[in-house]
Length: 311
Image 1 (cartoon, rainbow, N blue to C red):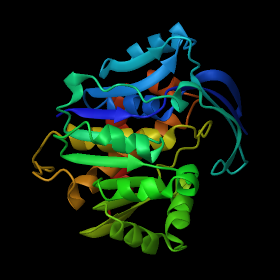
Image 2 (tube, helix red, strand yellow; image 1 turned 90 degrees about the vertical axis):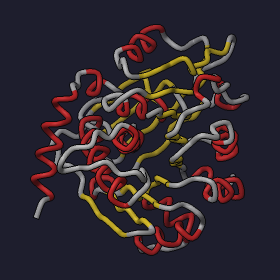
Image 3 (cartoon, rainbow, N blue to C red; image 1 turned 45 degrees about the vertical axis):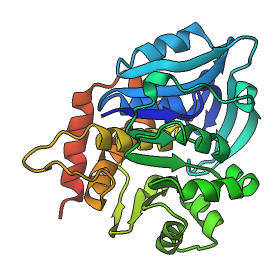
Image 4 (spheres, rainbow, N blue to C red; image 1 turned 120 degrees about the vertical axis):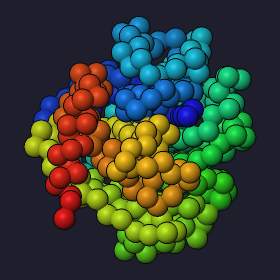
């Protein structure tokens, strides 16, 4: 089934307690697409400037599941750039700089061939841009959005409109508290459901994630990896695994087909895939670990994780 994502592709400078990396490939759309491509085809819609390095385009091609026909290169434009420094606990960070470049201009065009997309992920961007993208995909069966504190502070009205139009929302626990004024994560999730979505996934870093669905609640731990290098993109990779697993679910005797891709069982099952693939991203800077990954590596870690959480 067709999966499409829109968001940013950019160039990052990252400092962590493990080291630093300058001018590396990043962006929400890039991390999401790389992760989702391990499950099946994913259509990418994003914009970069003509300063976007050829080496990064080659990295993009290393994920054969990505359809990059929706990647626009804007002549004379500057690619989105971001710099961040992580604290010792790796759960919080300081933004050192943000250069919006072409992201501050008109959003990229959605190719006509993408109009039949059934699964839609709105990676982090201005909610008005997310709304405009959503309206161009009338055949969607499931639409999920990400957001961040910046939009909660500066574009809350647009965000509230968006929440009435999507099936799911993915955000961090502090953003959930900020948007709802509820410190308890479950209470925040339930309040978010009142704003429109059918389900909410609240990311809690090293403490895993919480799914609050109209049909139930589920908490999952993070995969216990020792090699923590760079958390950048883990949330977007998590979302890519989640949506890729939903869009390209292959029924089996233990996991039969679900006619409702947004059901509690479907989302809960897919969260395991998101958790597992995010645990690889954190093991290296940028997308370096994902470029070395094979689907068998994901399946092996999935089995380890499933055995760990089984009671």
